[in-house]
Amino acid sequence: MRRRQLMALLGGMAIAGPHAVRAQQKAMPVIGWLAPTSREQTEPLMPDFRAGLADVGYIEGRNFAIEYRWAESHNDRLPALAAELVARNVDLIFTGALPGALAAMKATSTIPILIVVGVDPVAAGLVKDLAHPDGNLTGFTVFGPRMNIKRFELLSQLVPQARVMAVVTNSANPSSIKSVEQSLVFEPARAKGIQLHLLKASTPDEIDAAFATLAEFHVEGLMLNADPLFDQYKDQVTALAARYRSPAIYYHRRYPDAGGLISYGAKGGESMRPIGAYAGRILAGAKIADLPFQMPTRYELVINRKAATALGLSIPVELETLADEIIE
Image 1: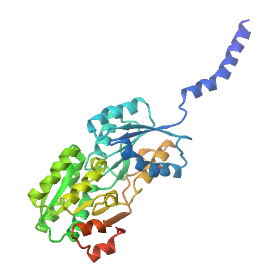
Image 2: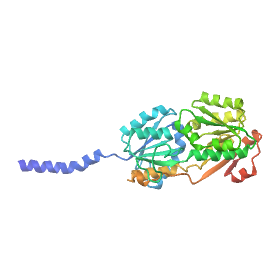
Image 3: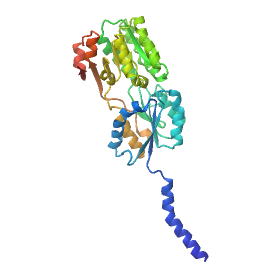
Image 4: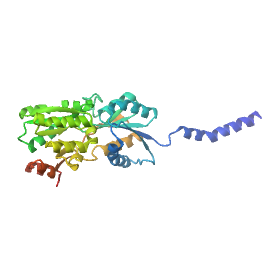
C-alpha cells in the first residue's frame, strides 16, 4: 500500500512539476517605461523604440510587453513611479532626462536601466566610463552642452548684429540648468562681445513671464535649452517667440515644423531606435557592461523660411547650403 501510494505521489509530481514551474515564470518579459512627461509626448517616440526592438527580434505583445508610468512633467512624482515599476518586477526600465535616470537609479541597483539624456553622463555622476558602464545603467546621450555651443554659432550667423541674447531653461529640471552651465556657451558669447542672459521657467505662466523679459533686456536672439517641458508647450513657445519678434533656435525640428525659426539637433530616430535595440539585447541576456553609451552620428539643421521672412531676416547663403531642409 505504501509503495503504491509513493508511486502515485511521484507520478503526480512528475505530471504537475513542469506546470508548477511554468506557472511561476512570467508569460513574457516586461519593459518599464518611466516617462517624465505625458502620454501624448511619449507616443511619438514609440515607433522608433519598437523598431529597434524588432531589429533584434522583439515584437510588442508577442514576446515582450511595456508597462507605462507618466510623471506629466512633475519630476517629484518620478521616485514613486520608479518604485512602482521595481515592485512590478519589470525586466528593465527605460527613462528619459536626468531626473528620470536619478529616480530609477535610486529605486534599483539590479534592474537594468536604459536612458536618453542631454547631459554628459560622466559629469552628471551616472557612470564612470561611457565605454564600459560600471553599474546597471547605460543608454544614449546627445551631449546637450556641446550642442548649445553649435546652436549659438548658428544663431550668431543668422543674426550677426545681435549683441544681447538669452537662453531659456527649465528651472525645475537640474539637468537643464547643468547642461547650460556645462556648455561653456557663455565663453564664446563673451568672445563675440554678446551679453547672454539665462532665463528660467517651469510652468506655462513662467514661460510667458520669461518671454516678456525679452523686450526688457532688448534680446535679439534666443536659444531654447533642450527639455521635455518645452516640448509639452511647443506651440506656446513658438507663438511667444513670434509675438516678441525674437529669432530663436531650437533643439529639434518639431519647432520649425510648428512655425519656429531654426533648429539643430540629432536626426529623428537617432536615439530611440538604438535604445530599442539595446532593450532587446538586454531582454535576450546582454550585460550592461557590454553595452557602451551611444551618441548621435547624424544631425540635422532645419530652417523655416516663412518664420525668417516674418522676422525680417535673410537666411545667409552659408546656412542655406548647410541646411538639411528649408521649410517654405
